[in-house]
Image (cartoon, rainbow, N blue to C red; front, side):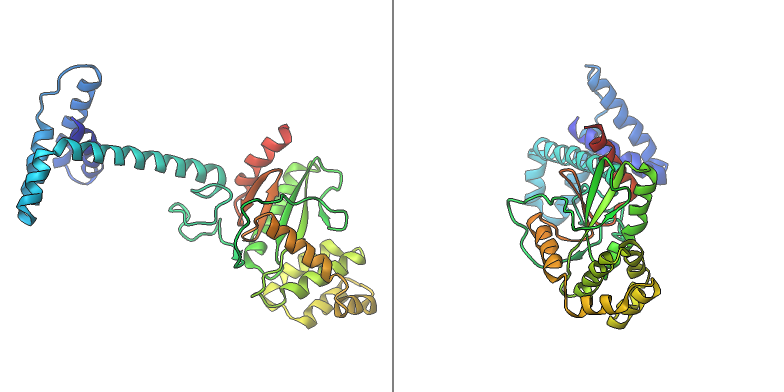
Amino acid sequence: MVLCLVALPVFAVLSIFSVKYRKLTKEAFDCLFKTVTFRKCRSGLDNRIRAVLTGRIIRLSPGIAKIFYKNYKIFSWVLFILLVWSFYVSFIGIHNYILYGNCNGPESSGFCIFDPTGSNSRISEIDYVIPANITYPVLEDDDPIIGDPKAELTIIEFGCYTCPYTKNAESTVQKIIDYYNGRVNVQFKTFVIPNHPFSTESALAADCALEQGKYYDYHKLLFDNQEKMNYDMLISLAGSLGMNMTQFTNCLEDEKYKFEVQDDTFMGLEAGVPGTPTFFIGKSKVVGPKPFKTFKNIIDEELKK
């Protein structure tokens, strides 16, 4: 009986490609149906499967074949438990992918079979041990807000201006702000990635732009010109926005907001940020440039509170 249960999904898949397995699928299903309706299954399919498997194993090792034949019910139950477990894991993976764009949930950046390229989960990682006891990040008056400052809910984003995955998330961030139309905004905190050239400099430059009330436009230009990033470009972008160039250049050269950038990065480390981009929506963490639906599911729950 148990072998029939294990064989049913296998035969069902094989029957798609071969007619000979359709009869076996029907027989296995009929046996299962009779069993669940408390009728005896007399097909003998499990014994035939047992005999076929034993015959194949005996070619490799008569001793193992003998053990299998005597204990086939135990092996059958092990296979059945593994089958049920695989179905359960697959269901959880599909459920998570539908809701969060990743098989392992919104906080994961690991491999997902439904997203083999990793487009929803890639991050620029930083090499450090995530603390066991994390401290959730807090809103700060000196960090910029993207969207309506009076919004009901603020998402905290830790990002890096030279991180391609943070750039990939920008369109989703803008979609969130547009979709919720004043109910949700984003506070962007710079998170320095040490092995990214100009990660620190671009973060300092963004704060210098904030000082002159040009943060959002400069923020956008940094991502638009990410591939061409260099020190001269940081200055020329400021000029294109009509900033006071003496003030901006002095601010950048003096590293005026060095401790602000360091504090934001340190806050991210304490919060368990594995890399960029990472978002905090209430107590929920979203890692990587997840699709809009991932954020929507979490945001909608937060707005109900």
